[in-house]
Picture 1: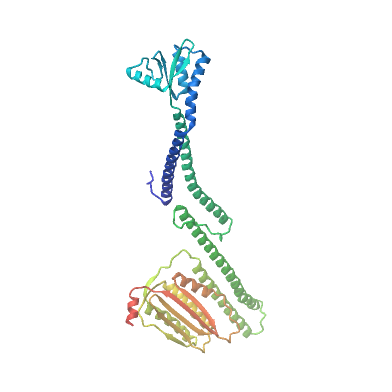
Picture 2: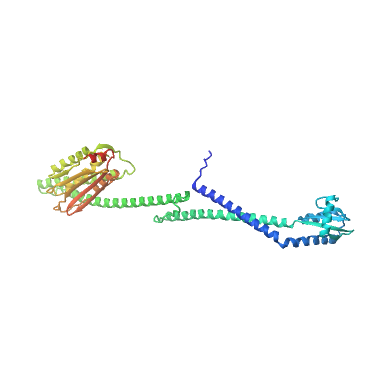
Length: 446
């Protein structure tokens, strides 16, 4: 199937350079030919050859002992000379002519009288008689042809030279890109691809695309390295957090199995402790499963649903406030009265709230109120959850799995989440994008 011809930028440049080179070559040819012809018209070398032409013929006749009747020998000499016309007269009769005349006409008689007056006849002794010889010289055509060939050759070389300049510019750029790609192949992704004339032609576009690909690949490797480091850190923390309760659980079970307790109360205590450690291990394993369930589906997009923002946020917060109250916490809720709409993946966002409020129950000071605020502007929903840290806790060990999971979920919603920990006050800030339907009008109405 024939491909449709398209005019790319590089093809257009090549065509323009071709036309420009051709025009410059034609101008150069015209200048060279004009100057050369002018020089030949004034050159003394032609006149000198006109003088030597008749002498060469005279010498040829003498050396070859040519008779006036041997016209074939005379014709051979004329053929070799090429750039003359020869006329031989005997007793005012034309006996030989290059153009084939064998008799003189009335016009030739008048021409003959003019030549005789000018003295252009030269008498040459043939082997059998003497005769008057007249020559017409066209030696300049010999040089004109040579000059024409030279001018054409110079113009052609000039044309090739200009085209090679353009081609060399492009091939040098291609070689530069090739060498830079080899540097990238060697692993140096910090080396930039040179982009000459952004968008100027297909080569510059190719270089720009390669450089963008280099940046994207570098960023991807950077993210993968960060992910590997985070996973390594996570596994280290998990292994430590799992080993501690697991070791204790095994110890309690060994005491129970080998009956190293002394009283029934001690047995009950060991069973209770074993049960607590088992639940602790279960919580850690649930967190780990939740983390990997979020982070192992990079390529899957969340199926977002459309919700009334006020109803949704109030419902999510109310669910958590009941749990806070059950665990002895007080709270302050600062809500938003502006109507807004939002698209989210409900299960994932509920998981975020579960993690955040679970951390509050674990690490917050129940004597201080938990403050929850949410508000909207033209583009975003802002949620702030603030609590005082329980300073009476002996240790606050955490693997950070919950916050990593929350961060990933919020980012999948094209939002942002940040944490501050200042003066025993722990604050979480969440920003989520809103639907733009009538939000500006609703804000203005308020």
